[in-house]
Length: 304
Image (cartoon, rainbow, N blue to C red; front, side):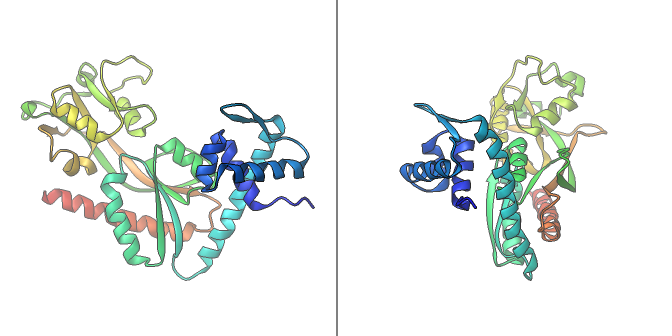
């Protein structure tokens, strides 16, 4: 039997993902020389190179690419063993790795974390905020336990649980308050400010306005809803934001809020996790806490 260690496989996966010894070492929280030694020992054990080494980066050999697929399956299975052990305990304890998209995280996370730690005192919550495609990738690789995203994601190996639906609202300069809310056709003719490529909320806004994502636009692509709302306040254009963001994003900008006529644009927020996850029963209970947090957030926003 080959003397390949789990640690070596984790270091290999990090280097394959990062393509750089320094970045991979940082990810693994070890020194670069220590990582290099482990990778070299792994290659010697296997009897063949896994990486082509260049001055600024490394890339997988053809064998390394095939090896990476097997390693990913092995590490995911090991993670699921840990999940199986956690699922066998009473209650949910230990580390919970949860991903959240940026158009949800600032508005729901405080309530979610507060409610989770109150109900499950032994839970150690680790949060990862990034765009949906990256969350899906990390879920499939076993680096996350669950994620809160806009549905659907249409990934066969992931379970989708719808939690709630919320409307999108129009944000205009304060001087436009009282003006009729433009139709989607009219919005296409205005300077519509959107999140940058990769954000699902951008795609939802484009879909509502019936704008092809590949079409050139005279507008601004922002990295956050905060940036877009501040730009609207400066008179640069208009934008769409989800209702949950209203109380946070409009309190410090001279903007007005407009609501569309029915059918209003909306998004469905839900949780996703691997269909094979032993934590599925516990994650279903966590989904209920997320729904509760969303209700509390909506109630608090209505009072503002």
